[in-house]
Length: 261
Image (cartoon, rainbow, N blue to C red; front, side, top):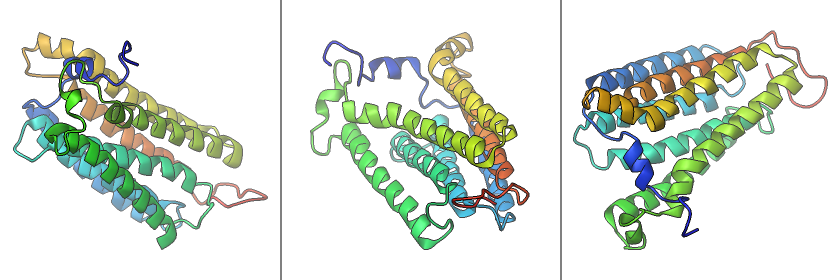
């Protein structure tokens, strides 16, 4: 793959806006924390909801990401905030994808086994990704030193940072679409799911495509990270709305297989 751009971070680092001091971005990240806490409390009231605890784990992960966002985007002092944010994002999206499996009730949701499997696998992914990210940044072993020059090629980090999150999101979307359309036989919840996907996509477009133009046009006062943070928050809210809409007590019970109430 020497003649391809796969695994190269030079264009990514050039075209995306990473840490800058932006008060508005910090404010939105702080609002995201408050909104997510509210969603967790609302989810707590849905005592009969399938996957309630598992979905709350996803929301907790998003809160921690938002805290790192404040340090990363705001340029506040903190040891390796960007690496921590990246690793947390990957682990949190993994938890989100597993939430798509929880809905099929292959295991009883909310049990120590279900929560343990999710947390254990997310922790393993967190440690593995964290090692690669930190070793790349600080050259602990020197194994990834070649990625610090030239095209900044690091296949492992590229797959984990750029491709894995997309696969996790696609997996969640497909699993939930099958659940809603085939198991529940409903269509309305898909509107919420599609809205969440669209909002997230818009945020990524602002971050990776439009950001450089906004930054240049405002002399660095505003960048795409501001809008990426906002649209990601809206996507999380719509994901909660989707989850809430398919965990109501009045859904029809399937004749065979697991239940979803």
